[in-house]
Image (cartoon, rainbow, N blue to C red; front, side):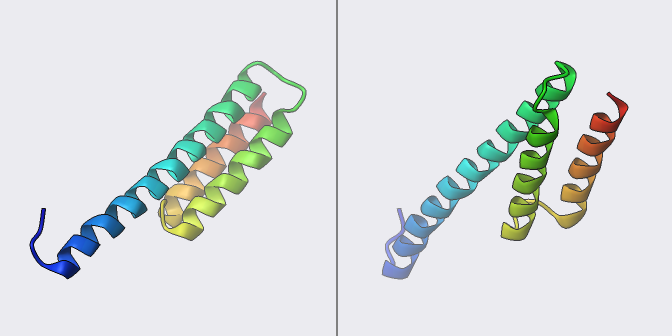
Amino acid sequence: MANIKSAKKRVLVNATKQARNKSANSALKTAIKKANAAIENNADDKEAAVKAAIKKIDQAAAKGLLHKNNAARKKSALTLKLASK
């Protein structure tokens, strides 16, 4: 570990931010997987699952976890998949 006080603090702060980002990314991936599963299984709540996933994608883009074009591509893929089924 670092010797300088500010460097020690940066290590702790970075660990906290890493944990927060990992949690948010995990929640995002789970929402997308649930939406894809709902579409594939032709579930009754597939529109709601896609809507929830799109909301998570928008939140991730707003927090800087996803690039805006990446978020748009993920949302487009979900809506196209929903429309085709």
